Amino acid sequence: MVEDGYTIIDASDADDDESGAVIESVKAASVELYTAECQAIANSAELSDAELKKLLDTRAKTKTERHQQRKAELSRRYEIDVTPDLVEKDDDGWYPQLRMHYYLTLGREFLTTRDAKRAKAQLEAGENSIWKPDFNKGQLLPAVLLLENLNLLQFLTPDVQLRGSDEKLVEFKALAVQHRHVIKNYLNVSISEKLTPVAIARYLPLPTFLWRWMQSRRGQKATQVNDSNPI
Image (cartoon, rainbow, N blue to C red; front, side, top):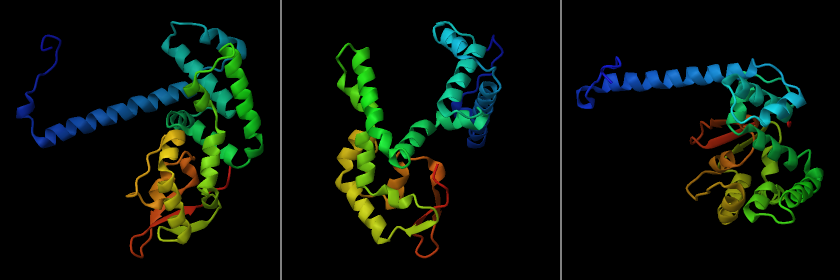
């Protein structure tokens, strides 16, 4: 490595300040590279449906083509302009959260039809056989019913303010702890009795922009304020 121009430093010779500076430098470089990647995707050329299909069928893609494909997929998934912020939100799992919120609220009446169509498509693709884990993963109704039973909708009302000691939150935590095994199976979220009601709610699969979390001055109790409009 020395021949390649690298400087070798014995770890035992590096002081804490130097090690910390290196770690921070690496973190900053990582953030810079990711920001540039998001920007490159957003700036990519638009693709027609035919061009996207052709690209999807291409095995070996250039970096530019991968960016174009990602932008095209995001554009069709969200049906809005693709920005660096949207790329980052999608990487953070925004779409499944939005979808869950939609079927829990505005799109509730369409959920059964959606799941039936998904099951039919899986049957056709598998020639009348479905692998159970894939089937379960594709169905949203069980997860939505679970969130409804937890009475999560009560927290999605704009301008609602609740303290961790409020009766509604206490009941919510009790339900979540009681059904923690079901929650783990359907939502892949681990619930512990040590968690506060607010912490439990934050783990559930809903868009983070719906919530603004803060600490109450009185007794430092966790307080939740939902100041966003429904999507």
